[in-house]
Image (cartoon, rainbow, N blue to C red; front, side, top):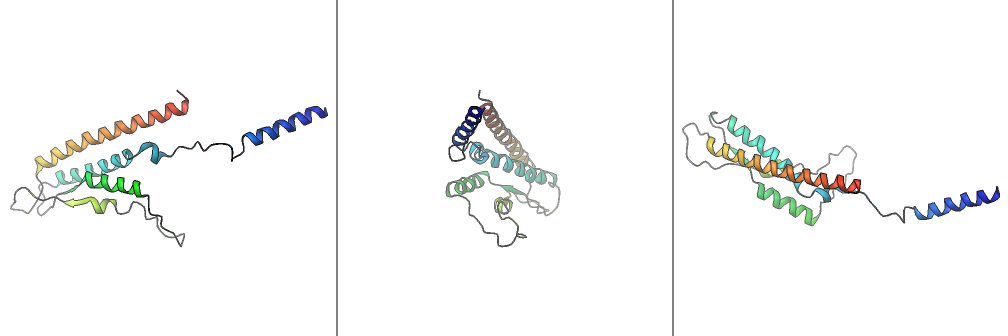
Length: 161
């Protein structure tokens, strides 16, 4: 009986030594690293689709100014942010609002320069807007497909396939 207690105690000691937090490697998955820029690209494409649809809807509105978002400037800013790291802000009060991601829409939303003047000062060119919307839809589908393949890869890695 005493041998069994020693054996159980020895097994527990060995298990504690083998599985102590200092011995077990960190196996957590960082979605930011795993998904890369594709998640942000998908969000940007969705925002741009809203802006372009708004332009198309207001094609006949007098004095409406067409707006658009520049994908290359957003991509450059996000890649710069990833290389330099995020700026950590200190919250001195629990009622403060988190500052991450507040300026994305304001910095990238620009007014479009009209190709030709109009009598009612509307700057929407319906053909250009529809073309940009179609191009954005293709980019959205590409980003979605890339994210889907990333998730499939993560799932197969978790399953050990």
